[in-house]
Length: 394
Ligand SMILES: Cc1cc2nc3c(=O)[nH]c(=O)nc-3n(C[C@H](O)[C@H](O)[C@H](O)COP(=O)(O)OP(=O)(O)OC[C@H]3O[C@@H](n4cnc5c(N)ncnc54)[C@H](O)[C@@H]3O)c2cc1C
Picture 1 (cartoon, helix red, strand yellow):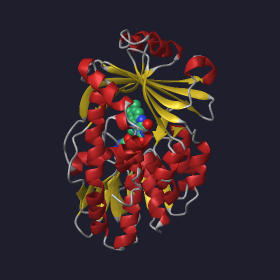
Picture 2 (tube, helix red, strand yellow):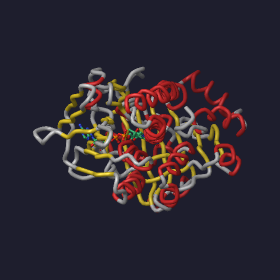
Picture 3 (cartoon, protein in one colour):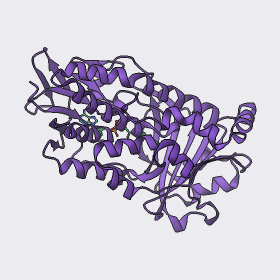
Picture 4 (cartoon, protein in one colour):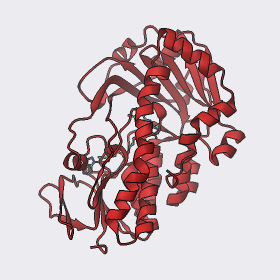
């Protein structure tokens, strides 16, 4: 059975990273992607230094670095007063501390780097229009089903099929994700349309009561990524639905005009209702394991979901190398190595959403007081557990 390929359900960032990592260890895989085309949405993504370690491990360090925009700081602004609360410098000291930079990149560019590397590998086969529906295994055989197509035999199945993972439903069976009641609206605009006094080389967060605005440059400064979020307590999960500017404006009427004006410059806004899940302790069933959002979907507030998926891919490949033909042991060790760290990011993402991004009243005052008094070294110490990770050391 070990001569059979590993089957990976999902060709997102996590699934492709897993295929690449396994190929580096000489393990063949077949990626089954539900969509007719492999790709990513047209928005930005922040990548911490921990993700850069993953790029190097996966052999795509140069290509990924070439596509990134290297910002100077993570800037936190008070959305009510319009004043800066804090700026975490991403300078040489940051890079020395974490042995890598912090950057932003267009999702399609990052996905493309992963995809090109997968296409260039003899050990990765990519099949689109394959929605994996279920698996069967009996200890000696693993079979994966994709609608009415012929089943595929594999040595293992990695469920990298995202927030609404079908593999998770069979493996864990915990139903629909938790709908947070926070809705994110995204737009990407040409840099010349961004207000001149906000063209900062920073990932900027304007934090306000029950809402926030994020912006940063993308694609060699040709574009600005706009992500704005507010609590509208909707209970229905929606992804990528076009919306009017009026709907976007609605959640920001109480915000300082300097921040609020950004919404006016965005076009073609689309919305995502944010969802996550409670952490779980077991995401392996024999020769089947989950990875990325399928295993530990999180709110976006740490900007780490994709970084965690890449760390998973690194850890998974490393465990395949360590355990040779004992695939069940490899998957189990992978999960044991990953579950506490990823659970911490899931839980902390909720907390920082509440206490930093969307704080009001006294909570916001405490936030401003604490965060404005931290030195860069104190920030680095606080973030060390997260940005110091590599996927190998968790
Ligand atoms: C607003 C927002 C901002 C974010 N910002 C950041 C950020 O700055 N930094 C960061 O690191 N993360 C960020 N994230 C999180 C990040 O986008 C996700 O964590 C990451 O994309 C997860 O990758 P994945 O491969 O696990 O899942 P996905 O990207 O969801 O990929 C899953 C793939 O599986 C396919 N699929 C689904 N079902 C099946 C099936 N049954 N069979 C086969 N294929 C299937 C899908 O079509 C898809 O291609 C953000 C998320 C949001 C919502």
